[in-house]
Amino acid sequence: QKRGALHLASPAPVDVIPFRRGPLAGPARLPMPTPASHLGPPPAKGHLSVARLSRYWYVACESKELARRPLARTVLGIPLVLFRGPGGKPAALLDRCPHRNAPLSLGRMNGVGKLECAYHGWQFDADGCCAHVPGLLGDAAHRDRRVEAFATREQQGLVWVFAEPDVEPVGEPFSLELDAPGYATVVRKVEARATLHATLENALDVPHTAFLHRGLFRGVERHSIEAVVRRTANSVEVEYRGEPRPEGVVGRILSPSGGVVEHFDRFFLPSVAQVEYRLGSENHFVVTALATPVEDFHTVLYAVARFKTRFPPRIVRRVLEPFALRIFRQDARILERQARNIQRFGGEQFISTEIDLMGAQIWRLLRKAARAEGAGEDPESPEPGRSGAGDEDEGRAPDGKERVVHFEA
Image (cartoon, rainbow, N blue to C red; front, side):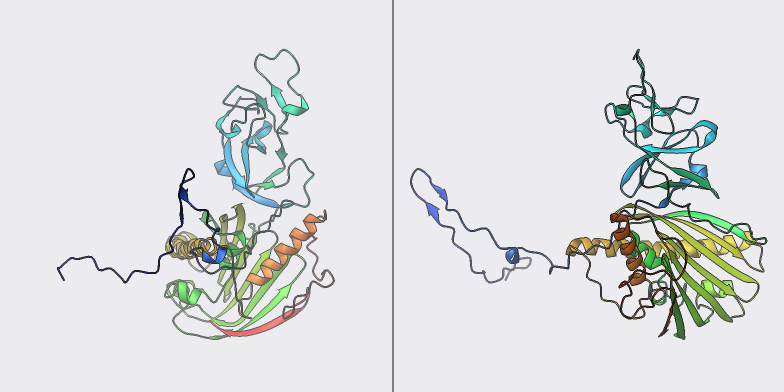
């Protein structure tokens, strides 16, 4: 056989397509192929862990991002335009002019707290009411010209949006503890091309760190750990007992002398993940990730890190931040690949064990909140010990109770 010749496999059996003769010459009609005859991966369950909770607060941007120009943001798949109205107070409207559907985020502020559409110059106030139509002699404030408005709050350097329009908000946004003396604070915005549920589970998942972040955070030696799971009506907390200082570069920086770690992971509805580490009396780290679902497979995290160490905060930040960002990039890559694979197979097909502590708990709370919202109920209050009858999943701690799990990490 000549070099470079094309090698052909034995021909496979070929179906012969019947051909008509006469005036209607052409291929005869064949039966459509059944779904099983299509090329593709084996079918998944078709489930996707996405819950749409609109009666909650989500971070739309940092305060410093919202300046003189309108800002486009998407929350829960809803296109919004944010701007500062009278007195600099943030406002949020649906990003669509009712006149000709141009994005209001392309407009400009008129100098007196009104948002002006870039297309025909219609102006809107912070409540979404049309305040001016250029050339119109009559009253501009007709109800058909109003834009849906979303309640906003600005606190602790963040602008929050209540994701249901034209309603009185239920409760207030999640509050961060930023006033303790001796602590430094760092805020970083990062993005994950993954569902809110997958992103939150990743942020609070211990087992993956020994493999995905090997050498940076855990992965050198295995240790027996006791995990205590506690649930409330709108949160879940896991306390890890007997955990030595994490191996790897980050652990050695946090506590050069070793020691036992006080470690808590927490989730709060609708989208807050919090990790707390305390090493002795000198080192304390709390990272709170405020997650905003943009679309089904797109989540933005506003990570607020508070820390106190025996070293100057400027030095700790300069040393730790590159490692923290590298760890997140590793998480972001695997989350994106996971999301692509879920879409390729047409849905999720998860198999969990008892050491997958947070994923099922987070989904239980999201699903329960979605059912309550669908029934027209307001979000649960944060009082512990409240649980709906029949909602206690087998093998999981009921609200207000503890469940203990032993594993290696």
